[in-house]
Length: 431
Image (cartoon, rainbow, N blue to C red):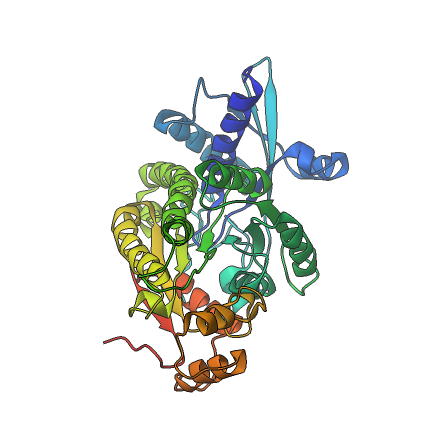
């Protein structure tokens, strides 16, 4: 492990993702962090509770061979101690790194790898897969790690708040880091909320997106859910819209979803590969038990699209086109990533009239649409709002909780990927 700082950090992230994959129990995984993040007292409590698992350092990278060796050592530890490790030391004899695994136990749920009816013939515990409908949001989302881009305001913050209430740890990724930090502090005060972390990110810049995912792995060891929510809108006629505005909308609404999926999927695939390695070892040593385990470390990528991704939008072609294109990406990514246990879906909300995208007094959509003449006869912003409310069968705009319920549905639904789910109050209907 004697490498330069950049290589050492990259290797540490690979190891954290591997350990998080090993810890997956069919429902959730541990939070994995370097021990110096816990502080001396927490480290002493953790290491005193049970012996450490010692792993040899990989020669260069965490590859299939190393995952297999580490999985065998993990399972041997588990069989001996009747519990998984909560502290892992990785050493090459001259240098070492320690990781602590933090598990959140929810009321009424069994501890990961507990002894009991799921135990093997030799008494060693095995993972108990999740095979039912979640009794509550906490049961579904508790202890998961979710990343929400554009999470400092609007739909993003509303979704993040609902996930936090459900017990998830939430990463708010936003260009406005100060606003994201303030929002994170508020989320951590909610009942049952996990940790909330703010990360500065420009989703249209690949290096910024890569750093965002690195920050998530540094903080939690990995993730379970990406909500690709960040978006912009520039309304205008095809006759007049500036090419720069068209490029901006495409970069943020279309290209950024590709970038976020690319770097998120790499981390999710690493977790799944580790889980699969451990599953293979269990299947080899105890075939009947291995056959009962889930095939994958199940994770989700959800793109917050728009009803404009389902139907063209007059004098709003840049936005509608970017959203139509993103649904094509959703379907394509879903086909590719399903082999790694990653579901990819989109949610197409109706209009969030009360959010800043619509109601910002200087650059909100009500102002833009009034200036662009999208609503014939409208003289004021109030006229524009009444016009759009009247087009919704349920006579109101979409809200954050409406979208959050769709997120929970897509996460819980194991047998759905590549879909674009309308949440529009009846304005757009599937057929």
